[in-house]
Image (cartoon, rainbow, N blue to C red; front, side, top):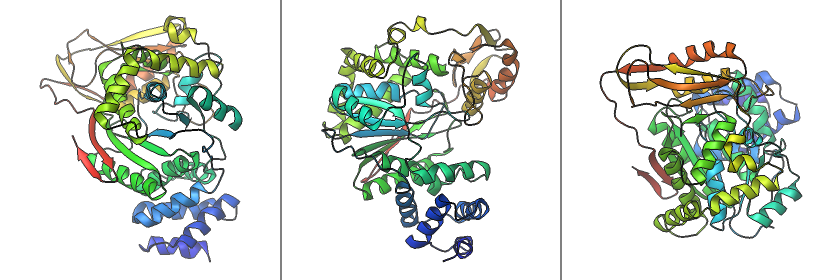
Length: 441
């Protein structure tokens, strides 16, 4: 078998066999296939696509390319959640404690932020002392003891995905539904949970820019997971607005704690309740109505917040900042961005540009390994659809160097449009995808 022939077959629109996909992926991981040939295959896949069967095979081969976690020693149905990424997306810090407080164990591996999207592990490490690298024994023991743990993903989980994503990132082949689906699901299958809820974001801050593509990605991932014996569901959620008001690591942790204490932004709270309710359904806790009520009780009686504090304390975090966010280290400089001219409504507020503005302030990284300023970020005072007039404060920037404000302001304003007509408000949840089909809202 030759890699040349596999590339040519996919280039010409052919369907690759299981043996051909395994040969390409495993050969690349082993170092027997050079970057230029794998890059050519990725571009052929990007242009020609893959069948569902090809994508399922690619996912399985990638999942088997590294370690697979066996969670069977932890009692109960283990539920995981994955988001396809966004700005201000701090839902994991809210829904994992809610679900655990309702008696469902969560053993979750999360990633770091790259580009305009934030990462859960970076947010957690904004809490002083928090360990996100645990041994497998520590990880399992914590979940058995308190019902939850969120840690960084091992470099040996779906090892092929790390290598392939690095190539996709520099060869303009990231935005391909079969490659996105196999990347996400290979890691989720290898992580070992019994049930997986997918949060597929859609809008200017997400990979998926339209509903049909978002539903197709969700449908494909649900199909792959179901075929591998997992309980699956996906929600298509809006990312034409950042979730909540805060963007940046310590700022987002503080806002997450506000939700857990019953005083968070309405949009973030609602999305978290819907995600948590769907996770509880997958765990067999009841129908959506009953599970929604269960999640609401966990917020109202404080058990979810206390469960979150238990998790951080178990992983070495200083929980005083969770109970009093005023104790977080503050950025030494802030800057208010105001409306210069034009009265009306915000009709465009590009979320990717908002996220990139936060990166320019130091809240994110442009490449792997870049340092992060946990205190940097943005607080939004006006969002898509809000009425504004000259002099109104759109948002506040936070940074450790005032010289960073100019570039961040230019980035933010480049995605901002103010018009006379009030825009229609997008829904928070567009659709729910299960093995039984698609329910549009």
